[in-house]
Image (cartoon, rainbow, N blue to C red):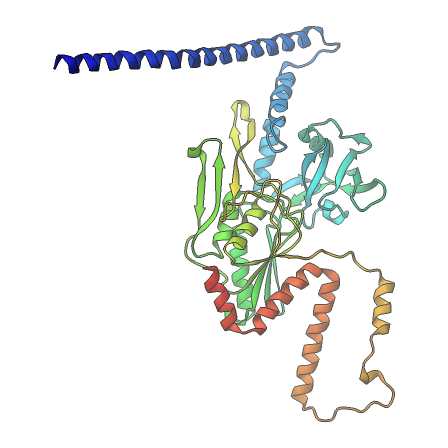
Length: 452
């Protein structure tokens, strides 16, 4: 018993010695780090006071501190920033779907402002701004060296006023100016229409109205076609959709999935991660889906496209998406300001991180430039058929019903041809759904079973 007690005491003493030997350097390192931080803060205070007392002009202390905070945040990544009380209020208004401005979503790259996407039906869209454009000057003033918020401030102004933006475009030989008239931007989160037997849902942004509006318009268009049995499929058009609320992206994805993961987020610490799963219920009732994306599809758009692609619930068509795979959390601050901080990356159900890579479409389809009218006229003149030949035999074997059916088919074909000239990518998506429909409902049903 005495030996056992001695061994126990010796073990405790040895453990204490080891702990002291290991913890000692760690504590010293931590203390050294804290001392270094305090030294840096003292340096900041010294610079702050020297600017206040010795700068050539008087400066407001609040402006200096705000600039320092914003500089600290913008040094992290293009999406972290400080929001002044006015900016924070403007952001809250924007998520509700109405705000003043040009109608472009922008980021910063190589010191210049880069257009993520123009928003449908806005002054920037009407003026011909495109995803990927670089803005170098605003009303003749260079944006090089400005923070993103400062550049955006330059573009703000009274509704109805003109702004001249200098643009560098990849396929343009030289920079050019674009004139835009500022207006109140009223975002229509969802636009819908039917093309033949296809329901097209155009999602322009992910505001708090996106999912309920999409759900209602989907039901309305299905009813117009006489029920889901008369629908051959759905096109979800996410082109030039810059994203928005993560919760809305989850709800839109869930609308077409019965089960499984939609998206996961992973932060700095394991406990900071989150996972969103689909619940039973498919608004499309298993019908085929084509998702359209391009270089202006970002953030929440990529969540939807990636989720439906990974679950094989949709065919993704178009071009590579923007590649914004990070999550920003808006944190309220004292004085009604806010901090937008990147807190996580998001991952598609298969575990893909889209950050800086984007979603690769299943079928790459470029949007060709519109042809000149004289080229179209030349094509029309070169198209001839047997019926155009002098003295050709007529067809007297058709009944009136057959003739009417041929005319209806021809009208649909002409409508499809016009759509290809107007929007080739959308026409391609609709053709895919027509092809799946031609294979029969059993084939479409088997696709739905594979997806789920």
